Image (cartoon, rainbow, N blue to C red; front, side, top):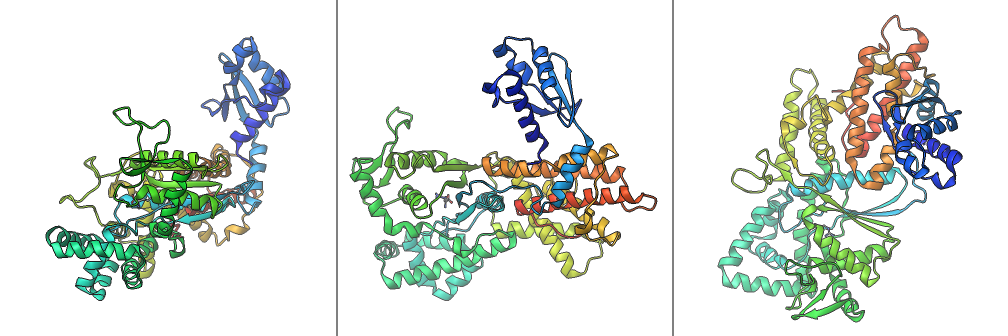
Length: 575
Ligand code: ARG
């Protein structure tokens, strides 16, 4: 692990143990980036009381215990330790990272099975912008866990079952299979749903037919199941177009919609009831997990079978927990789903723990996704109040990106490819660069800007490095140094990129891709300062400096390329 902050943490902890006893070996040394040195450690102040000594004295003792440290340690103020790393240490760590095919990213030990539930649009309706974030954040987490060597199982928990399917199938019979397929494949799911709904509300015989159809669907009648497949397959083909345009790694093999749990629901309820975890309350079968109360202070039920005998969203999720633990053998289950479902998941997890279906060795985590807002600060919608169609939104991003490429002289095919990369990159990065649980304002102008914390800025930074290599006619793979650090901008860049492996691990541990985004942005700005101060292939640069700077460029290129790839942001060679 080359991350300086982690190396420092370990060294200071060692020093603490040596100076004050092993019980201090895992005290937090409170290492932070500093204005006056590379880092400062504030542990002397926090431990002074416990040690019954003056903070400055503690700091001096630590300084002495750090005498073999590859850098300088100074005590300042009331007891800060200011730590500056030796250039030679930074350079050799950077060289090691460059030589490492994994660019400093370790492998998870032990490797875990991580089930990631994400995207999960509802087939009865058009996939809308609300599903964009869960798709993008979930996909990034999947990529990160895979790189770390975890066994990732993607689960696209499609809304593909339930009472609306009675009327959706009857509507399909009314308009004909061909027309239905054409409409659904074109992404007109909302229109299709609304037409079915209108008939359901106004036409008594249609309503009756729909009700009967739900029953035949649930009983597994072969012709009804065939019709359901006609509907679902066309819908999934549309989802796949969106995934394809976005460059999301989900495939049809990852679909594990609500329908797959249908055969398990009865047993789910029976087992919970037999175990005494679920009880009948006013005719409904409910779990009352302790600690959940409503506004009236009454225990809050998780309803797993309605009084009319129907199963719901919670029943399916109870069955899904069991399946993911028992059959998929999950160590961790990540639910990348809207924040508005927080209570639902807390109750499902609590009920599953009660039932013993979710053992303490398995962690279930709701990765809460904040709402996407329009520029007016309200839920993102069109003027007429309709949800915005995802495909239209994505197409607009590509079109706007394309307009930014005017006069750059690309041939049509190259231009189209770059426009897609920039447009999709912008939409995805805007989502990933803010913490997943905060609301965020969808703003094309901001996300497509070439300056600031945006995808185009980062894509441009890496394209700029590539162009240095192209102009010098050098293959980045041959830029192996040696690295020597002269100019402060070289040192700053080397120090910055060393943090890559640690940040990737943090993203996996905390499910927070925005940490990687922030790291990449800092890397790109540090690189920009570097190229502006340190000519690389210009005439007059001596061969050693040139070799070292090319190696720093190659290392930065790999960090930006691999990092953007982990976020799922496309990385065009040129821009
Ligand atoms: N289809 C649901 C929705 O759109 C999300 C499903 C999330 N996953 C789950 N296991 N409940 O709100």
